[in-house]
Length: 623
Image (cartoon, rainbow, N blue to C red; front, side):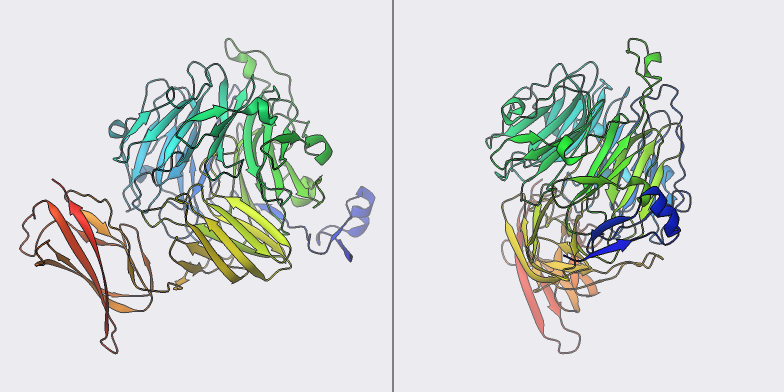
């Protein structure tokens, strides 16, 4: 196998030789460089915490559906910050117009299935909150109606998923001091019910921090991993009947330690999920044995990470060579003993660590050569391609020093990113994607909540090394639908629904706006939402060709009562409230119509030939 010698251009080779930093690597394992662009991006944040305590997380998400990742930062001792991506490498502070506050962690998820991401905020010393995305770059506090708020003020992490496969998102939250963890089931009407006692959750005496959903046993339902401080971790296996069972001891993940953060990924490309847990002492890497059990291989793999107290962590293929690397955030707790009732901790500060996957089950620490050896006091962290250039960037939350946004400067390897989106009958959180290119097989899962009280981008990122085509992509949706795409070119981002896919072009690092062009194969109506409804509803649709669009509404007697004229539309998907057709439940005369079944017909007229295509669906108005 040919090898090449790779040097950083801005370091004299003699100096590198002296330091022993010249590394022989496979030609496909070209090292990428990271640059700290925090101030240049307008994200220069500094939080003061005199106790050096647990601090908060960070969340990447495209809240405004414009194709790039925005950033939300809950603050423990100050107001939270909401940063909108400008598409040119910088961010704007839009916190004031959002009306959102949060102290500990946050997760974006579309709980009401209206096509945009809502925000769950977990708080310490105040009730939790749920903010509904209004679709116009604002949010509304729906906490009282949703019934998720409580006065405990003791919540840290959150993870979401459709655990009972009823088509909506439920969630699990960890509690640290005074109360047990909680599980909330989605009632499908915008409200939630606390089902903790009924479903088998018994994390009663532990101090929960990081939490994550994953399908560890490949049985097509979501399980839950809880990282507990001062106690054993918990792995709740989904029994498939709406209940859970703690199987940590029987599967081999019951090592007692002070866990902080957790991540999952298939680092050895054997098509099952391995688990990495950060700790107050030695971190652990649980390799999935493929039979429902795990083995700790952290020492053999070289990822024990002893220097500091571990917090945030993520698997990521930062160099796009086809295997998952590992990032670990470290931070000390030397002043936490000042808090009444807390034990003192020694100063165990240490740098953050980036481990490059060697492809043989071991990892190499490349933190310094890659420019991410931050020796600050890190806490939460999150991974996402905020500049849409095909490689993954890193955001690190620090206390008593500035946060850090590390931009990945890229490498020659090929890549493919896949962004699942729902069609209002299917969710995308919990989607598993398998990509096959030659003899390279990889899997990714879309999840909401992981690391240390943080959320990573909900885009599946695959490094492909030298492969310029993906032979096959298998997408397993949470509702059981399996979708297959074949012969997909590399170096692009696909936006996928269960029925279609589009291509979202790469954005150059200088910051060009995103463009999309249609790969929609046919004219179609998607189910209206909500349905049943009162008094208003939205009607999503898709177009394969440019056309003049109108939607006719008929009552059960076949009488046309309303025409919704939408004008000329380009090919593509029209799914969100700002894009879909809107009906206010009134006839042409402006009068409210009665309850009953109604039919809606989409008519597309070609501008040149005047030929028409149409499709019809039904909906129910209940007053």
